[in-house]
Length: 237
Image 1 (cartoon, one colour):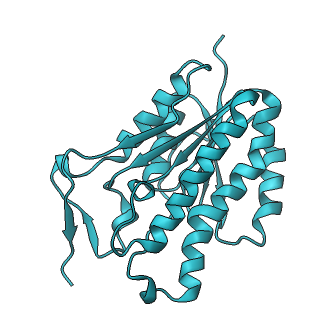
Image 2 (cartoon, helix red, strand yellow; image 1 turned 120 degrees about the vertical axis):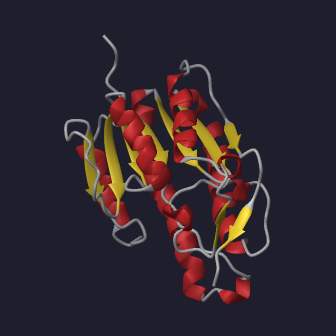
């Protein structure tokens, strides 16, 4: 009999996280989805459990995550996909905006990992998959704060890979290039519209499924995904 797998996914209400959730639900996984809203998400409730949670509220988050881990002790896979984009020269950021980007993109994700890693380690198996970014590989103009948040995620994933190796928990980092998702809705730029100029959320979901389908002794440490052509399209002002 095939094991029933249970995944917790942050950012599951839209974009990459939502696509991963849909692919896993279709494969009859149980998915605990953390997000801000779940309008139009028609997954069967037997497989999908939405959790509306504000990951930016760091003061309340530890207690909320501790309770969530107790309620969902069957979780054996954690996928960190939540994040936001904000770009500009460093001096264009208000001090609070710097903290807001770091709080959501890195600190809240570290909190989720902190809450669920003990559970995975006790089970002596499981996966922690971090959805990073090409911005974690090289700093870019007007990306100081965003790149810093993704560099932090990458460093955490690399360290956890070493920490978790003996416990049976695999840690994988996936760094996508620009993906055609609502991530760019509030930004003044987007990837090129041609199919070879952007990734699809399903490309990242397919990589996640490949990682999860691999034998327990095989670890994908880091996967970098890019469109064939890097094209940035600036929106009219």
